[in-house]
Length: 227
Image 1: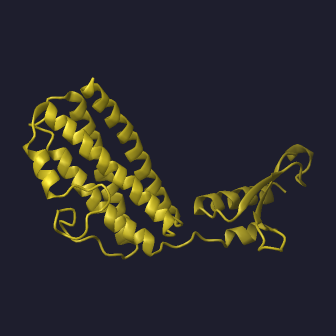
Image 2 (image 1 turned 45 degrees about the vertical axis):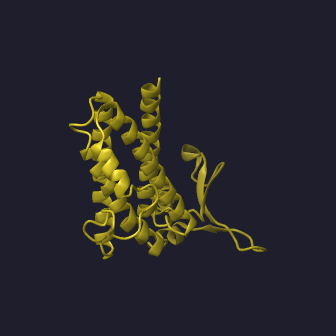
Image 3 (image 1 turned 60 degrees about the vertical axis):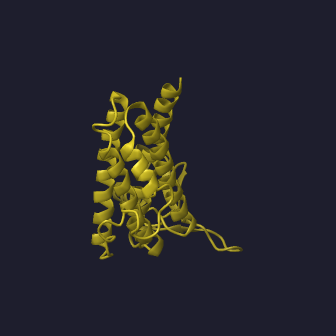
């Protein structure tokens, strides 16, 4: 029965990888594997509709399951987050020559790397699904609506004209707001029915995690400047 046990474990892994949250992985004590292999038995359970009982899936049933496809909310999220990240890159490009803080410089370098990587992943996600990329310069003010947290032209001009400690404080204020806007966009993705496809969910979670980490770091630096 060892082969059957391996098949069940592989099937469970497939369910987890597919992100099928409507199925439950259950570990039951014992099993029919014999004394040498006694231990928990893994089963995949499909919850029943209201008033109906749940159904335990066979390994063959699990093998036929596939991950849910992407939807319009996923596509919209990617096409909006790319220019949103693009504006953050414009902001980090202003640091050199305006800030004298090594902490700000290191922070800007981290933001640049993480957001460039995420832009590449989101562009790959779109092209891999034959979805259109956002228009060039979509992150520029005046090209379409401003996404949550984005700076308008007045904000950008004010930041570009600042120097020294004044720049540092303004950069942190604006970038915190910008990052919080990205977190809002992730929340909007899930509220509108997106993030079901595993790749979309993973990208959104990565974006959210990166933004939250950087927000905490920026607040720490801002507190030092205010002390």
